[in-house]
Length: 464
Image 1 (spheres, rainbow, N blue to C red):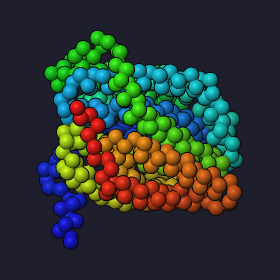
Image 2: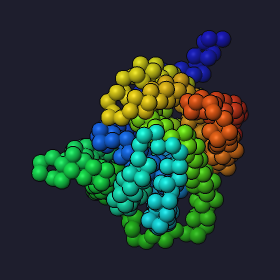
Image 3: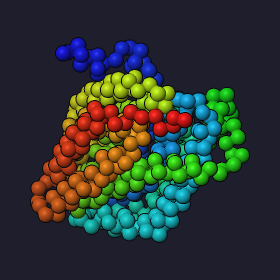
Image 4: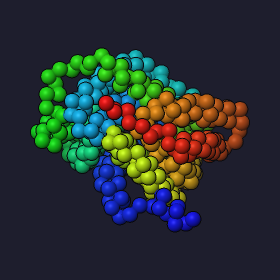
């Protein structure tokens, strides 16, 4: 029995070299990005609780836009990975052009919404107790930060169009290098502009936003220039802008497959924002404590996020090549590998939990809450790893309706009602509410296990 389990869930050295060749560059890129985000957060946290809370709220709102773009491009990305498996360069060009129009529409909508209603959206998170902080100041800092961050949204759009295509075609190193360059710029400018070094003015949260905006344009420039200068490695880029028109039947095909992903990412990210809002009614200290915990959690969860990307890329290409049994076997092993890695990560997080919040210049109550949130996130990280890999498994085979039900519908029908009712109708500690929301995800784990095991995702959606 043990031998059978080992054959099913444990690969050989060549298998892990192949998976890590895809996943490690993504881990490094995301890890460095999140590590600089951590340093950025710490720098802002040294100014005060109100500044840190205002920035955290805005980043939560911007995350909705980021994931909308991710979801909007993901549908076409399923086709890109399978086109690449078939060496269909014209197919990749069509998905690239579709991504451009989808990202442009989403970006224009986000800018209009946040310009007109950004302040009111921030205010939603500042309806609880002040816990000794200044809610009005937090609102002002958040509003100032948002206005500058909006300038970087177009650059983010271009990065996602190019990077998603490069990754789906197996190129993960260049996006990693561009990400490293961007975060280096971000880190240096953060230090100079937040605190006012080398004769520059101390701009606080506005300086942090300016640093992020500049770094986004640096990343976009590197990725775009490299892609067009290396046509031999990216043959699909030749003639990519001869026309931006996408044939109607293909646009409809991509949209039908991608619409559930777009709606899913929009609803899921909005659901996450709503969960944070539910926790925030317990006070400003909860916002600050959760922000500290999320900052360190983002650094560690790059492992299972990269494994999800590896599933999308590797399994998508195998399905496009018609290698169904190899896809099933590879998927089982990647999921097992992801969960095992995150068990080790969880232990490390528990060890770090009492230490990390001490870096921040904030109250003891905020630090105590941050420790509790970090430990809770660590306990549930292996669970998150499995759900993430299961999601990308289903998505790689084009099961976008299923992923929509699996992900965002579950959040709004289960997670949000649990958090909303417990936060408003009971007096139990906020950390207990957070844990109950995670425990409710056990239902999703069972559903994901059944769907992956049944193999409903084993299909080639670009077969001619």
